[in-house]
Length: 474
Image 1 (cartoon, helix red, strand yellow):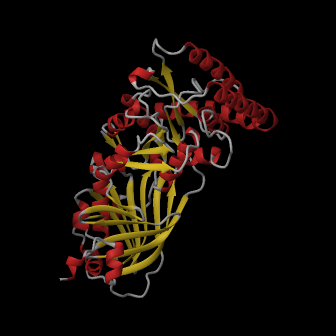
Image 2: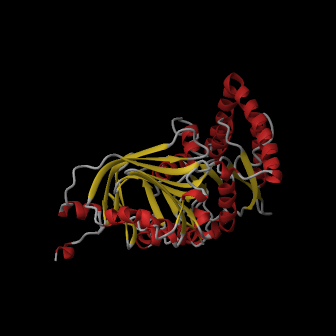
Image 3: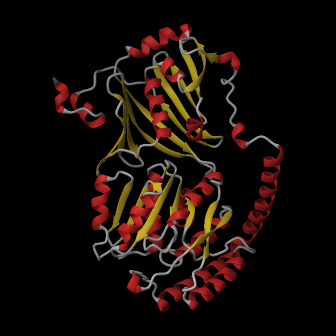
């Protein structure tokens, strides 16, 4: 089982029946987290999932008030996942047709190529309906016209990983692509936007009604929708999109050649994010005496409140995603990030781990040793506990009067898979900026404003922003 804080598994479902819970349980055993979007189901198939979600924090269930189509369900789930901080989602049918044993392979391909969409190329079983075989051939031909060449090996197969911000930018404001036209239109418009496709083989199976198979494909209505979708796309291509698509195809060819060259004879792009602080002249011993006074000041620092802005940078997105809120730091209670935009939630980090509090309730992320290492580092940073940080990180630091900067480079392979480095900057015993960098162009930056006038946290604040209960009063 793999746990991720960037890639989420997304299953849209409409009246899938008893097979839904079986599919979801199998998926959770392979990948966490999982988000199921119930698209206005009326068969009660969501009830077992809602019960399961109460005991398993890896599962989230989003219930839509009415049936709006597969595309609308995927886009609603994509928006929810992006707001929760995920960057990519693997969309998978909830009826068991798509291969759960290919989830990890597709997710890992997306992690290696985050700028791309990873598309399934189906291995069709012998019982595939003949009309579907011919329909796919026709769709492949039309998609080649719409992309001015090959690229989409199967535009109808919905088992695929999307970069979420790009997907929502391409389809979020449009009226089309909300039903069975979603898979094709999403792939074509992402390609027009410059997102290169990568195709992987994946088996598919078809179930008869006796086996619990469910199909909501309406032959006349949905085929008319697909024909109208292709007509719209072809007209838009001829009138507007063809120059950009030609440029994209040239860029993909050049990028492929450059990547091959870099892999063959050059350093990795990860090294592009060189930090001048990380050099032997700034290497710190865990018991660095020249930092002892600052560590003491942190250890006895009073409770602090301040406004903050968080920016999340992604390799596939030009502008960062920006979040705002208020941070509270306490030597006793830990760290509390109360987000006010784009949605209200509170992330609490203390000795017990991480707790996420939203208007809908509380949840704890699935246990992940890599995430725990980063969480522990954050707690030690709040106390500037250099010996504790030195167990898992090489420490590099520089002081200039009251200003200081500290860089943490992971020592272990497990931490290196989750982090490139953590950089912290501050004034005296106050942290002003934290950057958590995963790769050269993927990072989270938290900029903290000057703190509010010092005052002890009220009991109401402690209840709202930390794991404080009535029993703590005594």
